[in-house]
Image (cartoon, rainbow, N blue to C red):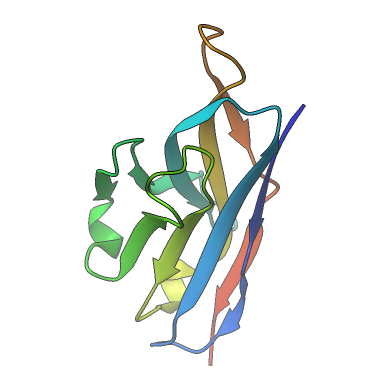
Length: 124
């Protein structure tokens, strides 16, 4: 059984910062790519950015220079993944989800696991 949990959301004023966490637990052999997504009311879920197992990151243009994804421990395949968000704007308001690509054993293939999401509201 694998569980992915996001945390760290909340209410922040425009220009403020938040750090979201994505933690996986359970029967995990290794975690490969981890993507952060968001879904605003009435809109489709969109990819915000992702980090590969090797640490390469990429982001959607709207958050480049403001958001940063990292692992708590680059040498730990099961490490928590963070989404550091800076200079937040009202249009960043959404439920944020992480999607983790997880293998539960050697040679078992991978499964994508979603967390339940954490609400981020940017408002004055």
